[in-house]
Length: 381
Ligand SMILES: C[S@@+](CC[C@H](N)C(=O)[O-])C[C@H]1O[C@@H](n2cnc3c(N)ncnc32)[C@H](O)[C@@H]1O
Image 1 (cartoon, rainbow, N blue to C red):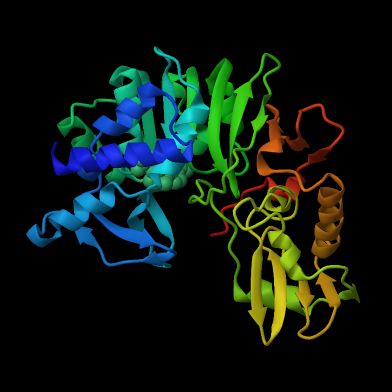
Image 2 (cartoon, rainbow, N blue to C red; image 1 turned 60 degrees about the vertical axis):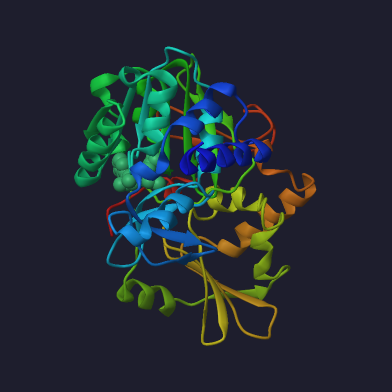
């Protein structure tokens, strides 16, 4: 057996051991599709550190290239000038979990949002046949590079340069939609473009949801058990020094805090299930930072913030929402509910774009409407 086939075999077994890969059909795909051929240049990302580029065209890199490609690690292929990752081949175990959640059947058509390197598209083509697969990416050069590499491997999905927020109506309806970036909110175009009974699998802040499109045109389903941190597909709110200065200049409402800032991580570092509530209901990407010895929680959506002065139990809040009041009441509710695991939470999205988080069932008495301010995505960055 060649070295690369052996490595693929080990990777597939590792994914099975993790429970990420269950079906023989998907196992075969992971055994067959050569990930290394789709990532000829990338930067390894190991334990939170971005390492030096591996370039397969350099003869001394070949071994490192092939070995890394079959580790359960992401390969970063684009980094912007601010240092944010803008494309990668994701961790194979998370990819396998998402493909499992997609529950494809032979003959299904799939729209993938986020072609990236083309590796996931290749897996879909291997599983369903190229003619069933449509994959789009917003970065034109990525699409063209993926097209060439996929063709060399014998895969010919329909590829296009498009903004996935609008889906891809040209080939709709689809049986399945999979978004390999983080979406928030879930675009309503996807609900329109998936068949009734079809599924939408997408990464959302801190998690991944598998939504079933129902006859009433809503889409509903549970979170996966794992934590996912993928790059956003919608503009993410930024800030500037003027806005920060204005927000800082506001008078604060002060009181004693019932809990330390660290309750945000409640539920354990792996599960972080409290984060499902925080990300959906307080801020999709809350900023937690230290400044002049004080600690802060900041929501870039509306510049609401809370400060925890060093060495005191006081919390000072300012801005349109009282962030810490929200966190504390959600935390108490989460505790009363018995600190539920991540996969007990679910999400319902309506054609009008309303998002509701729930526990166990969509009609549960434990439901939370996601506030509009967290569903608006401007273009301020
Ligand atoms: C994690 S990567 C995708 C990985 C890919 N599935 C693979 O197997 O290599 C996320 C991708 O989403 C793309 N993307 C970001 N925003 C997008 C948007 N609005 N529409 C479509 N693609 C988008 C990025 O260009 C990036 O390539």
